[in-house]
Each structure stands twice: as structure tokens, then as C-alpha cells.
Image 1 (cartoon, rainbow, N blue to C red):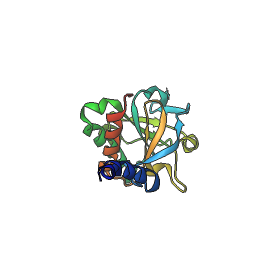
Image 2: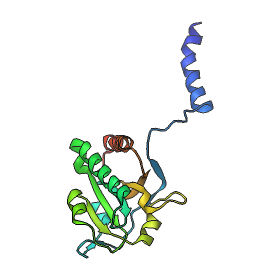
Image 3: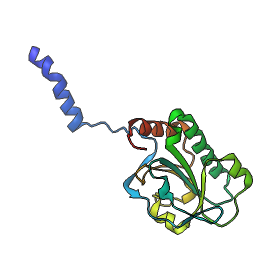
Image 4: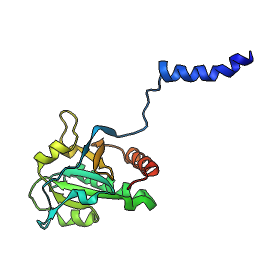
Length: 180
């Protein structure tokens, strides 16, 4: 009886590890597999000067890509990035926000003011489609991406993602990451 009680937890552990492993996952967003390293993109700031996104290396970078008109769904993602960054508290300085503008139209002054602190960068759609991981049939304007401090795209959230789920993912990454 003593041997049965002693070996039961070990046998149960082997059973659940090899025969019936847990199928749940802990992240809300989709992990990008394999990770994609940030290439040298031809990007510019609003004033036309060259800008290298790799200069943000060392920080976690939340990225949104859309047209300069920034429809309601785009503004919601910008709002989510701002709120999530603010909600991280003392870790807010570890996160940068980037809005990749896909056309040459001017950005509204209200948009620039409301999301102050966001890097507004113009980029070519063709280059971004090669770098940013999209599901089949997905559009650049549908997602929010996360680039790690080493410059690798590592997570994607779909349009309409809940702030609470995104925040939990970010909090977990910031807690266990020793970089950025």
C-alpha cells in the first residue's frame, strides 16, 4: 500500500505528460513561427527624413500598419496601444509604439496630437507584406504586431482583439523577459 501511494504521483505525471498532455495555451495572441527579424526597411518620418525602425532595438515595439486616413478600426488599435502601454505602469518605458503609414496622404493633426509619443513612420506596403506575418487572406490593417527587443517579430493580435488579453500577454512578456 505504501509503495502504491508513493508511486501514484510519478505514474500520473508520466501519464499526463506523454499520453494526455494539456492542450491549453497561455497566450492570447498568435505567436509568429518562425520569428522574423526586422529587415532594413525604406521608412521615413513625416518630414521626409529617413528613419530606421531598428533604432528601436532594445525595446518592445507594438506596431500598427494602415492608411493615413486611419479609419475607426485603426484608431481603436492606436488607442489600445496607448492604453496598454500606460497600464503597464513602471514598465511603460520598455514599450514603444509605431504606426506604419502605408500611403502618402497627410496625417490629421488631431491624430498626431491624440497619440503623441507614437512613432508615425511611412513605409512601403510591399516591404511590409514580406516582413509582417499575415494569416492567409489577412490585410496589413487588420492586425497589431509585437516586435521583441532583439528585433524579431514574435506575436500578432487580430483586429477586434480585447485589451485585457493583449495586456496579459504584454505583462507576461515584461515580467519574464530580462531584455528590453
